[in-house]
Length: 138
Image (tube, rainbow, N blue to C red; front, side, top):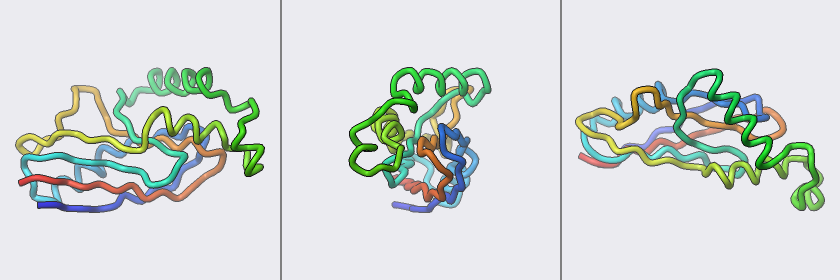
């Protein structure tokens, strides 16, 4: 069985981190799948899906690390070509990846005790996002 839903989000950009675990769990419940895989994917090129301990210190540490790895205040070739100032967001999204797969066992996501599924919007402005959740299994 394959069950597909979308999660709609409005984001603030600039490393806005949104906990989407409750919405993903709702999709799993709607699917009636007990064992399989849950794929969470963000179409677009300036957002990412990952798991993290959703705690303010860890969230800030991640934002700080990404700023060191792909600074928002330097020039990127993308900016020179498109003049939109969001080259850093494309680099960050490529490093973090647009999707995530989580095993589903006996109707439960196999997340660690403190792990949450998050969407991170790296763009330099607010956006409306549609996150695709696909539950595959039996």
